[in-house]
Length: 358
Image 1 (tube, helix red, strand yellow):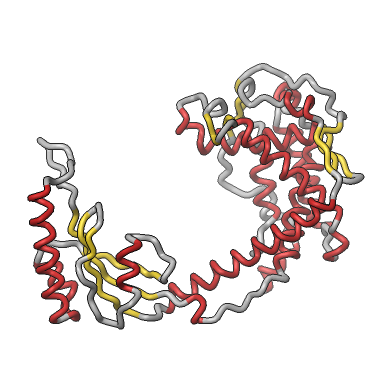
Image 2 (cartoon, rainbow, N blue to C red):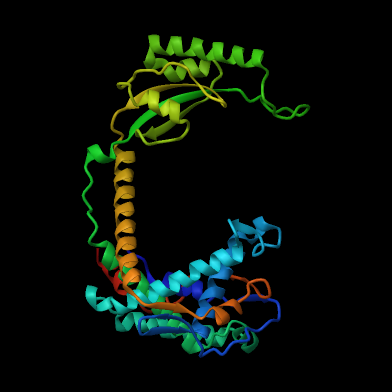
């Protein structure tokens, strides 16, 4: 998938737009924090990328954590801050590795792409206050270096993924389609009564209704939707294959054995009783979408395989003392929303130029 460098620029330029807190990172900006083979990332670049990532999390997920996002437990033995910072470390290592292997894939940044990066770094430097830039250790050179690493990562990812198998057969991606009805075991909400689970007697009545519907639908499956409407039941569409889990795995298993226009028996679940009719054994749109999904999975798997091999062979190190000083709790960052991509009328990346000519 082609991605535009300008999208990276738009996001990176806003990383210091709104800062809360007064703590400065007490570490030498030139101190090496991450090293991969002979390549290094200094504290200023590492901190800036960490703050950029922090801004993304706080902007889009902070509201769900009631103001204490970074101390929230994310996984066993790790806070959200520790988990995210560990991921950032790996991303920085990977960027250096990809930069080291650019010649293997004949990848380089064009003059136009370098110009975009330089203009973005200059504008960032001019648009943010000295105080804010000091808080995140970001000057023009820092921003330019980080943007360069991200642009190189983007182009290397695309180059590596080009080697993934793009051919997917209809058989491999085949998606069927069905109409289905759920006779729910959940009571309908009303002004006087909150939604609640039914009693056993009420569930039995619902199941009887589903059995009656299934019997009628099997007699004339072409009228499946009409019969559902007559019984006050809401029908829905879904595409599926044998691996699909929604709306219900047992329903999918039953429908997957049927021919076109055949109707399932009543499939009872904790949520209620399902009845479905298969309407297509090869839905064209869903199958094409599945093909793209399979190709994307192959591309991602190949990228992971290649980079993990490089990582296993590389000599890496992290300055834990310096890295620990990057504290998300003492400095909050919110991204300013950008309505227009910067430089959209000025400079195009190689990918943009190719898109424009297609």
